Structure formats: C-alpha cells, structure tokens
Image (cartoon, rainbow over all chains, first blue to last red; front, side):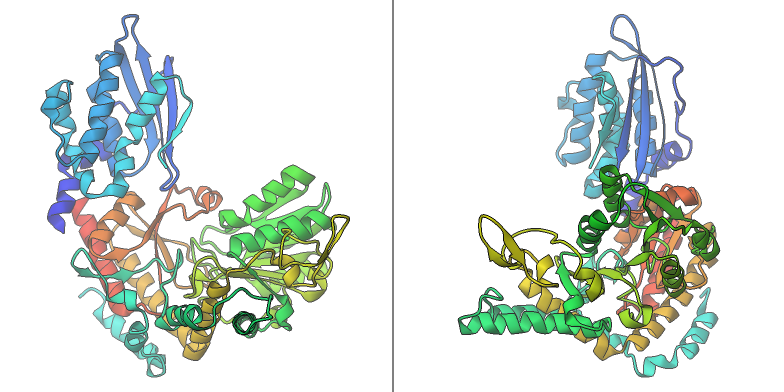
Length: 155
Length: 423
C-alpha cells in the first residue's frame, strides 16, 4: 500500500505542492482561463504571456487544490516557459497520455523527451483513476487559455 | 496505543452494546465482507449513501419474484398483491415517522425531489413577489437551488439563518429574520457536512408563531434519530431512502394533510388523475395526486423493509451506539497532530468532518482509500457552508449503525500514514 502511495506522492510532487513555482497572477496576460474540478472544489487560473513569434514568454498560475493539482500546475509552468504554442499543444496531448496510458512511451510522443521525463513523476496517477483529473486540470486550463476560453471544468 | 484508556472508558459508557451487538448487525450487510485492495472495507461514507441490509435486498427480490405487477390497476391478482405491498410500505413509512395518516406520505425519488415538489406546488401557488423564505447556512445544495429557481420565477426573497464557527444553528439570529412576510422556513434537521443537529422544535415553534410553514430536510436525521411528525408539528419533511439503509430512487415527502389538500399536482400523467377528457382532467386526492406515473414499486417495498429493520434494531439503541462512535472518533481524530475537526456543535449526529494542516482533503481521501477506508472528500454539496467556514474542502467520516470502534482505530491509524507521507 505504501509503495503505491509513495509512487504517487513522490518528493518532487510534495515539494511542488507545498511551494508551487510561478504561483502568481500575470499583470497583463494575453491569455487567461479559469479551471475548476467541481467534484473536489479545486480551482485554478492560468495566465500566459505570448511573444510575437508564438513563444510563451511567461506562464503563471494561481489556485487552490490538492497536492497533485498544485504540483502539476507548478511543473507545467516550468515546462512551458520559452516554448512555442504549437509545442505546448503537443505537450498537452503527450501529458494526457502519460497520465492515462500504461504503455505510454515518451520517445514516441514527438515532444522534448527531457521535458516529458520531468513530468513523469505524475504518471503515478495512472493507478488512481479518479485523480487523473487533478493532474490534468492545469493543462486543460492552459489549453483553454490559449484557445481564448474562459472557464473549463474537468467533471 | 494513544487512546486505549479512553477507549475502554468509552466502552464502559456504552453498555448499551448488551442490547446492540454490532458484530451481529454487521452480518446483516453482505457488502461489509468486501475487501478493498486486500484490506477489510471500513465504510465511513454512510452520509453519502448507506449500505443495505439483507432484509432490504431480500424484500426487493422476493417482491419481484412473487408479487410483482403494476400497482393501482388491479383487476388481476398480482396487481392487487403488488398494490397491497406498495401501500403497506407507505403505512410502514407512516409509522416510522409517526405521521397521523398514510395519506401524508408521498413517495418521491429522494429528498431532492421532495423539496422540489414543495417548491413547485405549495410555494409556487402560495408565495408571491416579496414573500420570504428562510434557509440556513448549513443547507445542502438540494435545499438551496430549488428556492433560487423559484426566486428567479416569482421574485421571492431568500434569507439565510447564520451559524457560529462551531456549526451551531443560531436560534436568536434566526428568530430576528422572521417577519410578517416570511412564508416558509426550509432548513436541515441534521447537517450533512458537519453533523449539527438543529433545534428543530424551537425553529418550528418560532416559525409557526410568525405564521410561516416549515419544511425540514430530514435526509441525515432519519438514519440516526427517531423522528415524530406529530410531536414536531412540522409542515413538510423530506428524506431519501438510500441514506437510511434502503434503496436508491425512493424517498418520502411528508406533508400535513390539510396542506397537501390545497396543493396543485406536481407532475401530470397516469396514477394521479381521477378522470381525463380533452376538455379537462380531475385529480386524485393526496398522496396519489403527487405520484404521477408508475412509481418505484420495488424500491418502495425495499424502503418499507429498511424502516422495519431500523425499528426492529431499536432507534434508541442505534442512536446510543452511534453517539459512542462519534465521541470516540472525535477524540481520536482531534488528538492527531495537525488535525482539526470542523463542526463542533453541541448536538451532533455521527459525522466527523476534518481538515489536516498542509494536506488537501482529496489527498487524505486517496490515502485512506488505499487503507480500505471510504470517506468523502470535498465540499459535500454545501459550497455556501464551506465558504462560510473559510474552507475549500473537508474530509468527512460519517458513521452508520454497522461501524465499530475498530473502524475508528483504522481511521486514526491511516491518518497517521497521511501525516508520514506529507511530513
């Protein structure tokens, strides 16, 4: 029992959950969306600042929720900063597969393998299906922000 | 062990167990033999939905195997027998809550439908713009949203009676909200999120003095307390079957006969009419006026069996057993470092909501599940209450008549693991 839980609650996750990075509101975000998981009451806001060439110049979030959702949001902001929008969208797909597919192979995802490797710590949610939504909430919200959406929910 | 001495004291206090043998009671619930991830199930989510005793499951199966047909159409034998069983269930529910007449027992899908029925019939007919309804901060969404729908339609005013930080219903503040425009007070009898038992007698008396009717949400009360419609003198009382060890899809709305008689139908259809022509239809008397369509026949029979089951165990014995669980659980949980119980009302049913410093309720829920322990984590369909308490979520252990002191120990042990993981 403890092994599986330690796999889910790895030190990196606990660390990012306790002290999330880029936890702030951007002053003039070009893109913003609000995400919520009505089942547990988790809410978060994702802010993106884009360069003229489609680069994500800054990305930040605010919100409250469980360790998984906060850590995932924190790791996402670290991962996406400096990347192209198109790559962020591909990473969204890759991350979703990482959280749900047992046989997912990072090498075949067509995105920066090292970056995906860092997100691997969240793959523990596969053993906890009801928690997948916690891990993916930030990414869904980020995608909605890029697409100009206002609110997403993962229920 | 941390609390072994106090636990002995608790057991000494709880000598009721002579008449209430929880281990024998557990044998009545087949699902309690299940193992979750290799561990014995510790079911602490009865406030969300209670498990079913074999008596309920058997009653439903036997009904379907021996007497099943549609009801109230009875030229043939089976239909007559099914009707008799269905109406016998209504009588059992009447006795269970000591209503004056079985005609005051309306079968609905659950408390939610019961409350919506009152909103859509009684309140829609008798309330107009500017009339006031008083709710409380403790309410479940099911006793908030139906009134907001009516508010949007009719321009009624919704007032909210406050609680204190411990979750106590504040009677004087409630009384100050009563006005000549107050038409209805709709409050919970027992809070699903905190366990608070509200002072319903005083609420009803004060409301009646002000000329207002009272609807109680009894969902969390009927599994734990004996309720008596005539002694309470309450006007409407709604509860769900599945929280009192009965099936889903069935519940009861109690309404005083003289009020039901003044109310228009809820839904139109078969079962609720006397005559139908294209020019005009006439409606049956209550309760059938409010039961359009083929009812949940088998579920009603199952609910009747659940009422019998609780009565046979003895409501006072069940209450005493659960109060001992509540006292022990409150003591063990609050003794853990970083843990805080949310809801410390003077009178509570066996519900222990809590938060742990630095750990979200959802993470607590996941870790407890790995230990075989089922709790609820979240806002408990009471978001305004959570906001009032300044919380996003709590973890909630809710106890039923089949829980044991060992279940409490398992909870406390697993909460220590949560602390270790998040240390």
